[in-house]
Length: 222
Length: 214
Image 1: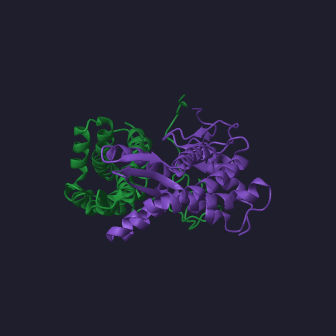
Image 2: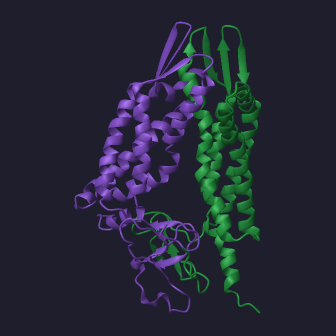
Image 3: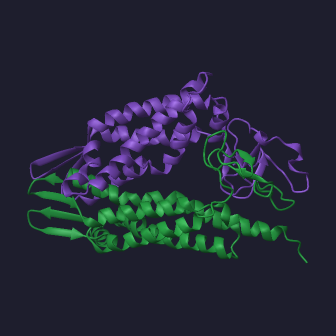
């Protein structure tokens, strides 16, 4: 981890020593104030007090994020309809797609839970992909950002903790063991699509430097 | 590698500025909305602790029935069986899958309990101060934020099982009432952690540092 590429303004060095406000960056977690300086590609600027990553630019991040997001959109759509897991016991069998899983609580009058599960494993991740795509598409091709780009990116950030695809993937492993003695379980094609999707999502997040995105959205029309 | 610190850090608030928590841009104190990303600006969320405690209480309250009522109801040819969170984990351990039993116990008992204690401690120490360095407490906060979502794993397991195990009379799994209250507890606790303004951890100590020592 490379430390600090932004200069700390010490007290007594005058009222910000004439620095322009747009050149400053404040740590969102602890309010420490720095002079923002772009670190080299692949390096990270980290807050000296709380170690929050402030800036982390990656080479060709924009186009990579767009491509990975496109791949994820295709995968998630396909994964919705193919069988996810299959089960067989005593000559009887059943297959469940992701959609079935998301809506499984419906049967027992637990509609709130069904909606919530569907949201966390499918809708929110999908929505985030679309929002990021909408935000970055014009920026990557050096065009003017779309007019709602700021709102889109803000929402995408706010939704991040509620996208729980990777937790769901681990849940599958636990579920398998739980019914192992009850019936035989097999993976459907959608399971593998979903696993790849989770890996891409983690990779994608490592490319996304929100400070760089906000910087590039500054020229958006209001 | 740590940077050498010559003095107390200058915060945006001490410099007469207000920081945007969404995009890290600073504005003169009193600016209502960030001109770059459009987020609401507030130097310190004054109602933060109130919100934290309200969601915290809701989370604790939902966590009690989550442990008393069955999470999973299994109907097979020979038996009707309802298991609670802890009971389910114990059964799995009896079958020999100690790893999975450990995952369930950690995700549904240890993590929620730990989170309740950690959030309560952070909120109390933000108000009354603490001997633990703010850096350590901030680290604790990050752990709480990161780990909280993982408690949902048990709810997802129930969802997967009840979608999959529908073999008419041979075997059928349906979610119990605890699935709902447990999910609610996790969500409330996540909201409680999100309402906490982590800048409050640092304010008291930074103010102490600036006071001339005699």
